[in-house]
Image (cartoon, rainbow, N blue to C red; front, side, top):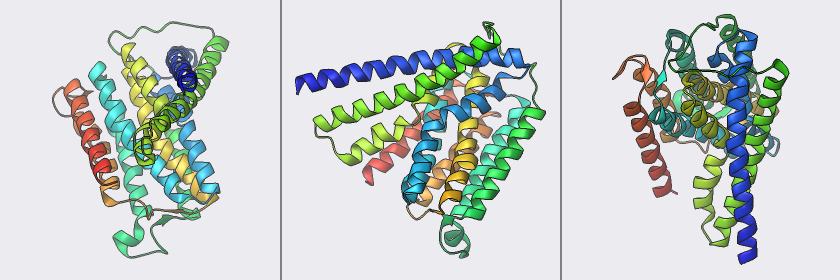
Length: 324
């Protein structure tokens, strides 16, 4: 048992190192690439970083959909978006307050709220309106979500403002090829490091006979969000708040429009396992980001608001544990 524990701890440490180095390479490479392409760090965060760090969720949801496990596919995305907004964005803001730009207020944050509301309306149509064949995302719903994703990406890139600078934001310049390699290497480090970390942590938990429900709510629930967590913390430490904000908004929007849209095209996804508490928590934290632009320090997600988001996550997780 001691040898097995030592092996798992080594894998855990190696996975954590991969995550940390991967996040560092991804942030520096993405920032440099934004300069090379003449686009903002927010758009890079929302597209390359946001979609890239959502890869674990995509794999889990697509495989779950293929296997007909709708609860796992939907629960993974709902849980991930709540974790992203409440805990990751909250912790990031506590480390370094994030500037919220006019385009964030007018387009990006409202879009996050809109797709969240749309998901609830499409997925819970029978409970809310007494219509449809049940609470589920149909293939038509999936096609609508994917079309919206394409339109939003196009508008975001077309309306981009690359001249926005953040105070204290100094970006190292790398060659175009090296920047791309850093982004690819960073994403690979995050994904594989995350897998190593989660599997070894799960193994250690089983060795100490922790319950399946406890493992699922703690290790597995946060495991697919490790890439976003590491990337945002590193971005905050490097004073790149727009990259961090773009990462979370991009991940959340991609999770709903791209991943759930694609997964429901593969197989209609039932929302029977989702409660109104889960969906209300998802909507509440999405709206809170918009409110934070007008409270305390205007056009900033500051440390106080970050602490409120983290407190919301603690309350939500406590509710889940109590109601296992």
